[in-house]
Length: 195
Image (cartoon, rainbow, N blue to C red; front, side, top):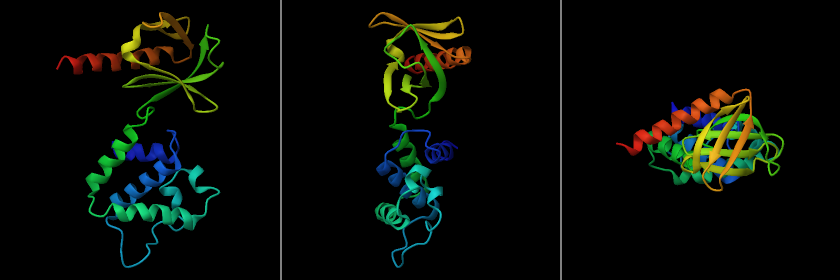
């Protein structure tokens, strides 16, 4: 299930992904679905179907033959990988991305002139990421260990940081959902550390 969700997220470009990442993941997906590359002939699995393996931005404006050759070149190197090997490799690859597993909330930072008027607040098991909506740039990376306290006030999610000692407000209609999600991750981290 996690593998299927990761594939879907990659194909809709939910996570920032380089062209090289996309090609690697496409090759893993082919090996997982079809097994070893057929050495005796050039496979036709990708002809007219690149959008099943690559996000649209890597299909449009690119030569289909060139993309196929890139993917096939990596697929050949995966000979011997089992379906499970491919699924785990795919997930490991995605898991290395900062945004993997995030829930996204559109917010307006308050009382912070250093941030744009609107940002995405990404919440995941590692912490919070503040992302520029237009560029996708990470503006802040806030691990849970740097958060002294959190909650909500006046339709905003609020965090109190240890260093530098400061309060940050993110106005969002989903302020209670953000707080609840953060609480679940914090509780889970405490549970893991107590095992």
